[in-house]
Image (cartoon, rainbow, N blue to C red; front, side, top):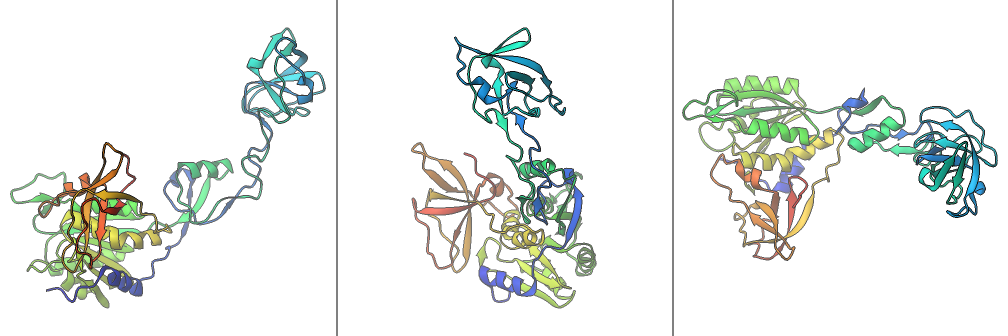
Length: 414
């Protein structure tokens, strides 16, 4: 039987009392490998970006005052004295009454302060006829307009997407300091479980949890270490858990945490070191059997074997721990408001999480429709769901058309 069930908030408090989830360290990696990593330093620009005044159009670099009064029927004539191509330092010094042909991205020559677009000119021999005036700095990106030398362009703790990678490249960094990825050992238990890719014998099912949980580890900012599938045997489980604890920063298991004779995880975890099991059963639905242990300063999250329950408990308990160890922010859960499609009932005395699918009515109103949970082992629940609605322990029900907050598994795109 379970010990006295903890509330979800109590379980989180117990975990925090036994484990301080902080970044594990810092490493320097090539910029090409930095996507989705967390920056471990403030980054300042070592130079102005762009480092020179550059043309934003194809046309002619000019002194703006030389074009004043230009009209289509009364063009201003300027003498063309050269060409500036992208990537070359201009050798021309522009004087009054002259212009230089220039391409997009090229550096303005000394003396020029604006660029006339090609389509506003008519070239005749060595002269151009400017048909529309320009003002100072028109069609020019000034040196330092994007970033100034010494300016902080990215801050410590920022998650690096393609946009931030571009910024780092722009300031000339080939390598960057990021927080170390926490290593998370993932394994499954159960005599009925077999790894995908193998022939499926009678009475066996493929291992769903290790693969979905490994992906969840990656989504949280960790590096999964897949250890495989193991039988419900205390001695063998002790050996593999010792190996997992030695090779990883966090361990995640699934199965073996209920009250049956094969549910050996609480007993096994309790034999591996102090303080051992710190959470053994939580007053939530789904996920009541969830167990957490602290062994040698490392956490072991033992999740239910039901795939939907395992992922939900991971989302509630393990995800924020792994995120903080990876240097990530933990308040990044996306939420949307919707209206309940039908009445939703919680389990008595337990905080209940109901998976829902979102859809828009013809009126445009966003509706949260519960996804049938199915029987034990059903994974399609989460494949069909956009998120979940949380119902507190003391609430009797959510009525049809009540406004609810849906915590999203990912960005919702209708």
